[in-house]
Length: 173
Image 1 (spheres, rainbow, N blue to C red):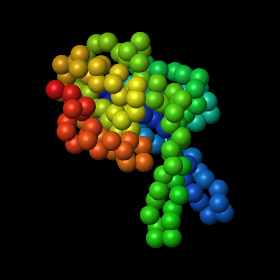
Image 2 (cartoon, rainbow, N blue to C red):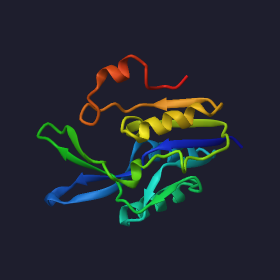
Image 3 (cartoon, one colour):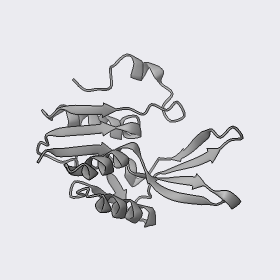
Image 4 (cartoon, rainbow, N blue to C red):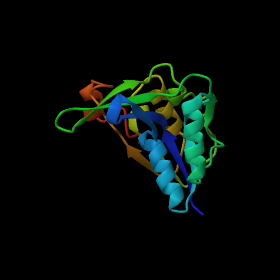
């Protein structure tokens, strides 16, 4: 069976509902990708940080329920990153992010896995935030497996358009 490593963030989306409350939902493009790939029957490993807080435990529970292997996860005590959604009068969703100082983006060569999968999927916001983005790039560059790169460039998080348009950062060659 093909072994797929999905590297990036798992976070908590806080979605508004009637009455002004917000419902937490597991999110992050890579976490959602890991769930989908595992549900397709592939041996899927999530490579990212998961907090020991309540949201982190919810992330872990949902990934495990989808069949994602968590042995390559960094377990941290920092909080889970949040994506706080707001829906405007036209029904458009806007996000405010709480990302700094979270376990979700604690990428470091000290814990990134050795070995070689059959495929690596890397992406989303984790490829934009330093210092973790550079750590992921260095890590990916040591692998010979095919890499699926899924950027999620958001000007509200990373406004340096040149960094993404000139190809100097991602995808690694």
